Image 1 (cartoon, rainbow over the protein chains, first blue to last red):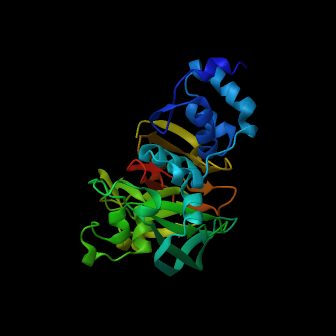
Image 2: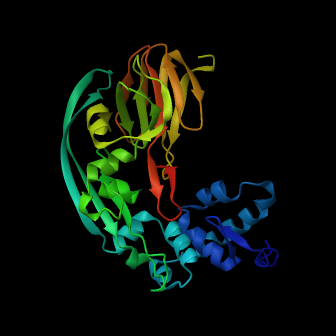
Length: 243
Length: 84
């Protein structure tokens, strides 16, 4: 495949344009775990098929962008895209985040044996809420109205596979109040994980979670409603089975 | 519901390792898919399985809605589906 035909084009990464091919390749290598994921999410049009073949040929030789490079990037829009590509797990693992809250919950949940016979399963689940100050991520001139905004994430572990997960959470959910209401801030890791469940169903009877799949059982009173995120109380009350 | 009638339905496929969340209902189920959820009416018992997770069993006659967990993206302030 000829490099020349792709080298003169301009590329978009995470909706930001203006990237040269050599740059875009390094961003994509950071963003996509495998060439399969790259092709699925980027090569969406037949007109891009040749680009897909070219990237596949050189995929193993591409060096992904690093957090160190992102922190040196002067263009804040570009830096934002770099963080987006690098991903939450690496960001929080390498930037020494601040632990805001840690809660261990004793749970009793329903499970089923190989004959589909139900039994109660008791276990402890741990949730941690972290913050990375905006100043560690972004820099704005002192005279700018824009101030660096912190990012928040909840860390949890799959109860079956023990795999670790990091999930970004909005600031208001992490703190329990808008950023300017500092006296009302009360970080809560359970509220944070509850927010990751979004339903469009009123009065669900109970909720099952298998990995990232959430199944809500409708009740007699259930109706379709505008999508909403679970709060802490609903999360603890409705969760019937988790694995 | 007047939508499709099947005995097996994939509710989600893992991003990283490709394992599927599969709902089996030998007596059949009707379903309809929207942008936000899959709505399912089980005619008999339904069993949700996955290679890495324990099974889950749903009662016959249940009306279910299946969703993906969601996450916030602080880099563009959007809410997106989580894929494990």
